[in-house]
Image (cartoon, rainbow, N blue to C red; front, side, top):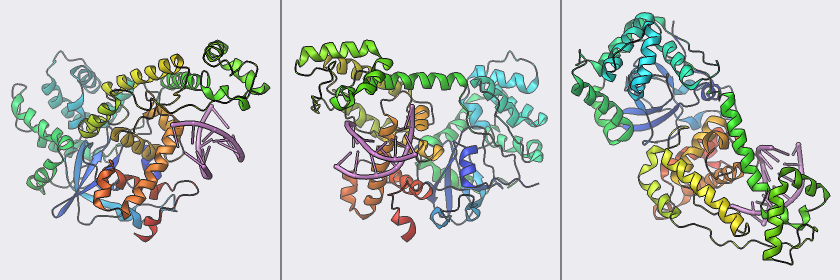
Length: 472
DNA sequence: ATTAGGG
DNA sequence: CCCTAAT
């Protein structure tokens, strides 16, 4: 039976929250970058849906060469929610997303041992990663449990609550093609000793996600070598955060909003200091309020918060950027962009964010909450995360995106919304701009491309005018 | 509590 | 990025 990976794009995005297909034109074939979370794989012979979000070469886990023409998303009727991307269903000619090879490669030895145990039913004392990588797929094949194993592992590993429903769409595949294509990557080494060859192979595989320039090369030399066969394609439901995760996120959010609505100048304004807000105030954080009041009365005796005098102080917008932030941002813009991936924030950024957040808090309390929000430029990584977030959750789900993608960031959901609006504007405006002007804009064209395409998919509520989608 | 939209 | 209305 032929599995059909074609689902309505929205469903597709829900079920494969991590799949993004990117189009890069390389010579006569179109190479697509597949960004995915395990266990989605694309094999030669597969018909895959191609959601074109423009070239996005830095953050792909693999890529596939697709047959012939390049489908264009804008041809799709964007009003039809359930419309199938029939024109976007393209056969895979070549794929670097070989089964679970890349996934296994990314696991730690410990994780691999767990998987091994799941597959073979017994533990292994082998701690050789390459050996495990080589043997696990064999067991998966024979047990026809490649996907299930991975899913079980994953759910085990992340302690997710059910929801994982792997579907082996082509049972034949797991007995036939899986090992073959796996050997494509792991062929030359038969023993655990031969690490170098394999390492090189895997490295070249991995390099695809790091070095887009290699894509064409790899694609050309391997083009057409693999036979097109049916393979297993897996589905998994949307990442459902665990309850603990959700609670933690909620906690964080509430803490965040406490900071925001507690000692912020907003609530100190007279017009908010009616009875109701007063009540609200003390509910939220009486201690903080008192401190604020004391501080405020010390700093500006005319501002009597407790008595509700409507004297409003406009915060001077100084300290808009703290030392170091700009340098960090530019650095991040230039180099470490590819680190920004998926929902795992790079620790460096995370820690930075935490630190800066703390800085913000302390300084705001120390200086009398003048600078409620520091104006930090949006980094390219943040923009990317936002785009991914919008891709996965849609426009308007700002709190979800905030929780999932910016949980440790100082960006609020409103910030995300604002930024998205700005991105839309700049992306459409960039069409009419000269190249010099575009370069003055720090956003690369690829990002703007993605925004444009997402704008087509998710028409921004109301006032949006994705005019390019209609004309172009 | 969140979002859309104006500023 | 801030602010507010609206939900």
